[in-house]
Image 1 (tube, rainbow, N blue to C red):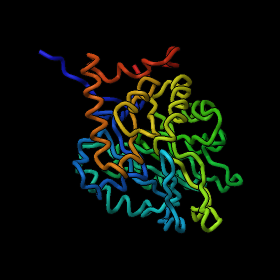
Image 2: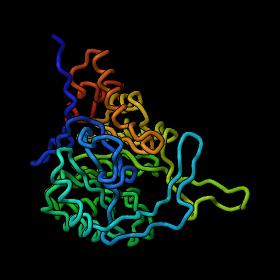
Image 3: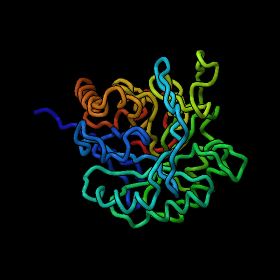
Image 4: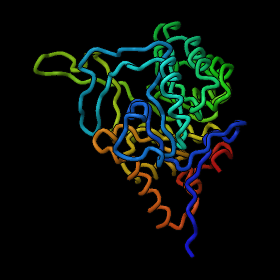
Length: 319
């Protein structure tokens, strides 16, 4: 009789509440709406849904053009268009409370206080299994530098948010930094239960016909397959530096990409840009992981985590 494959992973083993996913395939914030709009497949089959990044007040977002295709990827500059935290709690939390798939609220602020206030307003709302902090926002209190580029700012956000919530907290790191390990250690030391590595890479493209930047806001975030080698390298670095679970995010289009992230040290992965071209991508990634595990006689997906590393993991959270 064939052994049963276990795909369950815990993204917050050190938290009192834990954050147990039925499988390691998540959808990335900003690429799946709020999950309620998606009709291509049953979202309950996913490991977790991460909402659009939500701010304290509703936002209309950036002026057009917001999206441009690039070789092996895309640029986006949506500008954090979202319904605001009050509407998220009032209108969508009751829907999420009926779902079996864990829903993680992605939140962001332009000051430390805004991050904390968004977390406070979500506290006690049924339907949320965790919070993901988008640390790629410009810190208006410190000259516009990204929170995720400044250890002091990142630590302040973590302290502020963890004081206001009892939910597990995932810190989503920025790739716009040479060495992510310092920020990773700082946010773990100040309360992060897990890390998501990473986010879009700052980039741009030109409109040669009009002799001006193609994106209305000039700069945009690069995502898609072109981002994967950068994110994979950063997952490898971060997983070796901290003892909390790491989520790999960036260019996951198929099961092979997901396996690469697991071998580098990721406990789970997020599928993002791939869903625009192929709405079924998250489920196809999941099925591909199953096939890979059975072909290698791996019966617990956690056995893949860090298996491709040349040196031992920093801690035992992945085991």
